[in-house]
Amino acid sequence: MNVFEPGQTKYSIEVMQAYVDGKTIQGCNPDVTWGDVEFPTWDWSTFNYRVKPEPLTCWVTVLNGSLASTVHMTEEKANNCVHPERNHEWTVRKVVIE
Image (cartoon, rainbow, N blue to C red; front, side, top):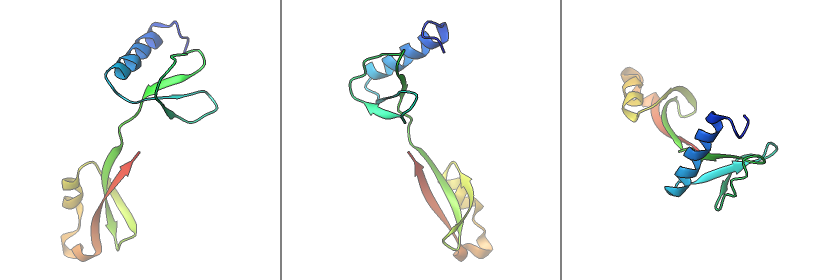
């Protein structure tokens, strides 16, 4: 996206405002993965910037300790999905994706 397009300008403002608000900013150039930037230079023509995504937390139901069955967004939903008649074979595990 061109730096001077209105959509890019709005996005840039949102990222810079998040930095002012104390959020962690990440940057990358096209050949590198995202990394935290302590003091961004805001060189939008060379680098891409974003607010560091929050980790995603979910829960999975696991059969016999190894085979994940279903991913759930809440622990309650995962617990409700465990088969009561075979409860000793099923467990619920928390998963955090960075």
